[in-house]
Image (cartoon, rainbow, N blue to C red):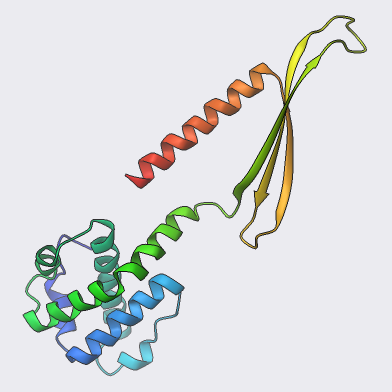
Length: 186
């Protein structure tokens, strides 16, 4: 989507009534928040399938960006371009009423980058005094147990035994992942 809703989409939106636009915007919000499918059949008399895709994609982008960027009423009105004021007001009302649903959905989709989530961890330090090849070793080892929950809330334990070098590599990769998540959220 460009900076504002394009003229061809504005023309397409004005083909529907205010009530139809209101219902369409709420349906798009439901699609964003709960993956409820969009029904082209309801609007097939107004738009061709390609026009339907353009309209729904424009509304979808506008709704998500308005929440992501915390747009004010004036900013949303500006993004709606030359759309008549009563249509702009309808879209604004949907954004106001469904703001929390959209926000929660965007947060959930950001948090769901991976299907697995770290639920808990436990660690234990050991000092290996010797091995079958060396009589005096004195090497510290870290036993790390990660309890990982998948999307179905099933937990499994991943056990790692790390020496000093492996631990440094793990810490470096976790720091890199933390920076990537910070970059995605900003």
